[in-house]
Image (cartoon, rainbow, N blue to C red; front, side, top):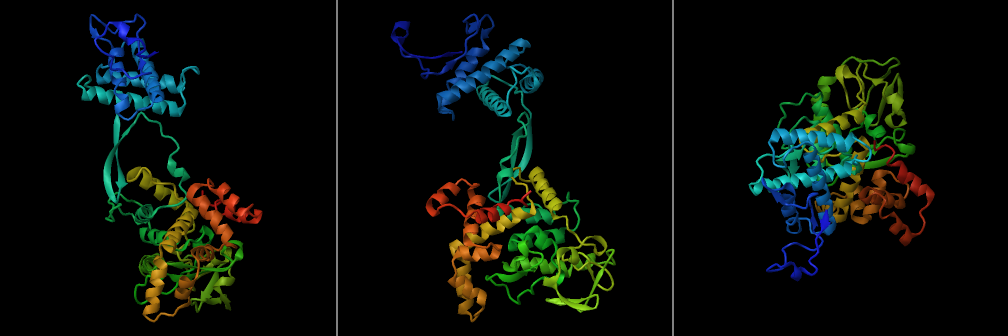
Length: 472
């Protein structure tokens, strides 16, 4: 490989300066010939393509060099196996197979890292695409698989070069779901297509329960331990009319992290979905299940019930005790039920499987979703609405119609970070600030924050760190 320089080009006996960019790589065969009795050689064709790079998305000389080296290695491989650069598809596919084997698992001195192999695939894809457009090639060595992804709310068919490696995706770094992905997740839990229509291929169970619980978690920001052990009697009543002001939801003290009581909220639509599940799907799942040591509940209401003959409040029950609560006829009192009235608690597995199905069938960019990621999603969505004034406007409208509720007043008077601090149950607004910065840019801005505010209290950092321990 040689790098072109036009220095002293006047002495070359040419009628004008060559149309070759400075420092453009030039591939040369060992005999220094660019054509023979059979016509132009492969190196000449590749050199012609390389000269199109500056005007086709690769303006950097460093990129030219990388492309030229990749093309050189491919041509060397083809020559080793006596395959023409524009051979039949069968020969090209076979050559690509041996090339991949050699560069990915061959001798150490020839083996490529995954990122370098991706560059090889990119270069050869662009070269053969150019050759086809120029009428030089009738076949390419690659097989392209088709898939579907969501773009601005629409399903669009896309292609994927199957020679590319399946690498760790950017989605593993995603800490929260944007609004469109959150809706896609809820529809996936419900067994629906991204457009909201029924998915005939869906074979999951309890879609009504799963979708309602997904909206509950995304709408309240509860931790896995908190929402998993919710009782059906703890669901707040649904207002008679839809409201833009959220509905308060008390998080049980013994089920909350650090046993700290707090009140979060949920939007009307999400709460309506939970009530619809209770009225239909949950009613159908009720059964006679009994744990080994049941805690039989009678006279249950929103605050508590008579447990084994003794009046108790729900807030005084720990998660393990909640799992043993049953009706006199059997059947768990947990909000989420499985077959025969059994309590359902394995939300981590369900969420991950749903995310994987969405990624494989509908949207390849869709991230892994653990229950705690839904909490992060709630935090970011709530902050966005607080900052843009959505809740303040809703509170003003409520006040104008005679609603003097404490929540409306709180929304009008409080700082957004203070509100989010209370909803998430953080001990200080500093924890909330650090938490949000880690959600948004993965600690990148932490140093800048410390420069402005000074060293962060270790206790604050520890509390923020703990928020991410449950993400996987």
